[in-house]
Length: 342
Image 1 (cartoon, rainbow, N blue to C red):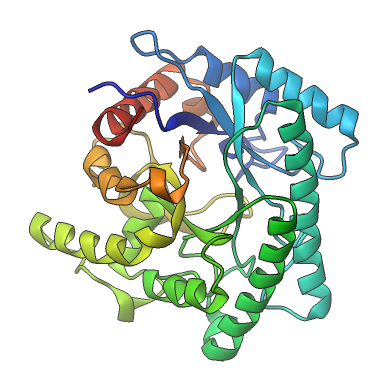
Image 2 (image 1 turned 60 degrees about the vertical axis):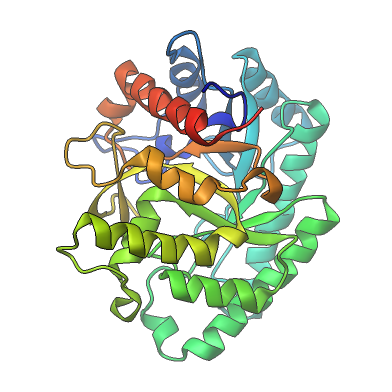
């Protein structure tokens, strides 16, 4: 059955994450990512929007209003809207570790302030009418967290509560991206503990990505929380998947469609994390449409208005191939047809 909601968005940060100037995989400009997105078409259907990273080279977090409105005009000129934004919370951007000292915490919160300012300008412009702001702990790896998990989780929760108050003051919500490389968020059980410690379900929720959450099941970086063995069969997978999604779905306010082959991957300065694969990858382990249904049950009631494809760290040649985007769009349409609404 064909549905019109949720809206279908493409992520812009695959043109940045893991990319480095002077290598075979330099950053892909926002203008080119928009062109590739707008050109995709399947049976007359197209992407309806994009999700953006509020940092260079795509978006200067300190850009003046005129520059931000020019970006909005460019996006709208392709017939696209803007949805969720990724806040520049990491060291080397605006922010710093959410479990760090007061100076680091202040940098993290400054990234939230700047992202909310950008969101407000794009909201007022009219190009943005849905979405939220994504965050993580900005603490690469779990080694330091493991030195004192209780204290460090409490510190991250404190930072996230302050970030949530800033977001709420701007009419925004925050989504914690579940990914194995972020301390305190590196397993399904630890991120659930963190969400409960923050305790702001109306403002601070969870962002689920199919590629990353598969590695949650397998217990990468947290073997004690593994729900399946490496050689699991299909029945074991779906039993475990239901356990994980039942726990995290009530908190889930943002959703990424993706494919994964059960391996970790990293490139450039990005820590190893869930390996995003092309939607039709022959070694992809996920039934994308069926898996999406576990996360999208009651999605409308949780305020989800769009879903987004995430293909971080794809080679540039893959991103430049129009077939990549048509294949992605096709599977996203299938997800919406199976689990969407009008």
